[in-house]
Image (cartoon, rainbow, N blue to C red):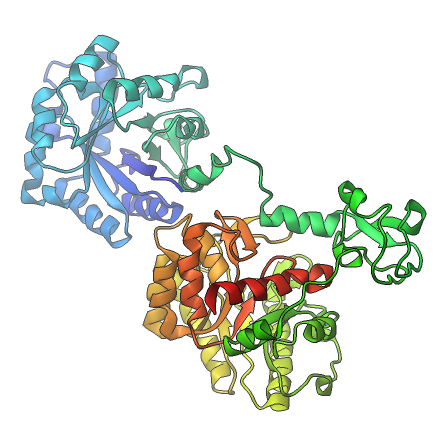
Length: 606
């Protein structure tokens, strides 16, 4: 991820209105900015009596028109604190700091603007406050910058590259100076942006700044000096997103590994070999016996040497996919491994079409039906399922080809479709419970946040409570940092971070812990996967388990993911609940991936 801090400078864009300033603070917080910054000048100290230049006349008028008192600014700092955004302030002379008295401690950071870069009394006065502080280098020569940097306390200051034009033309940003400034300073530097185009800040991010400061406004065409070099809340949201994901954006300097979304697209859009006619056991497979068709659930054309000229070990029906199981002896799951899996309550994910084959080959006695929105409309003979087995059900992620499962969606069509799919899934789970006499957990990937996290967790806790009263367990699933929806990728904002642990514990919300998702998340967020498994163990009623590589390598075979994942996998294996093996494409090639996973888990944890 990234440690870049985005600061929304209000400056004088509040037009002298405390109410407008409050709205700007709220917008900055909603956009994901780390901090919000004010400017303060005591009007009695700002300009000389005989200041008569044309620029002086303009600036004096604007400064007086846009004045906020210390009391007003302090009210705004309290409001910023309430929204979780850090308040800061710029001063131009040390005397003005005294206007805030002991309340000066309420600011989280301070700033010396470019024009006061050489104001050593102000610099030393701010240093004495002991808070993180910024100083801009605009308007001054290299000799002055070099000299002044030597006077700064490195424990306090972060120098900012700045071009003091309002706005800065795209050709004048001189972002290369960021690298030069970092070499001069010998530490972290930032960028104070007055650019005409906010996108220039993206290039500053790539230069490695730790802070970006930019003015915020509701209208870049408004009457005022700073609006044209400011960004709207929407632009701030985009900038904050880029800053937040900078480490992920710039990752990949190494061997190429397709992400999970690419693998899904390869499967759904790519082609593999299918039998053009009947292929008998012992036949040599030749080009006239196969065709390439979608989806790619078998061997692809770049693997033709594994197909053409090879002798089939088993018969293949016309139109059936040709995968490795046609040419390789099946992986044998030993009786000891089956016994281990049953004792550990391991389970396999299945679809209606492969349930019989997988349950016959790997008889774990526990299976989770992964449903699609089409599956829930089927007429199902519940008596076809062995009542001695344990079952669980995974809600469809989609309720149509273009809509996610979201029973709280503002859009009425999506909400009703989600509620319909949920009710059909609930009916199937109830039927399985009646058939087996055992609880059938229902796992849901609820990922859409409407409003706050409090609202999200309240809604889903209430939903779970409704079905709990009916004897059913509806379990929100721990999610990855990035979800692979509709062939693309989407950052998720719930059920994947430390803040969610607090909400789950507060509501005592039963969940499904997906260890693979969790291990991907600890590469992005500030937690250790094993710690989350242990902390949420009292609320974990069900587990999905697989290894992971990085933040987007989902469903890796056990032992092929990142070594640090082992502790979280071990902690999850110790939990007394069903654990569904979710190795990617484990059901293909005759279930070879699942068979290998059972054997690997026995080897590691028996």
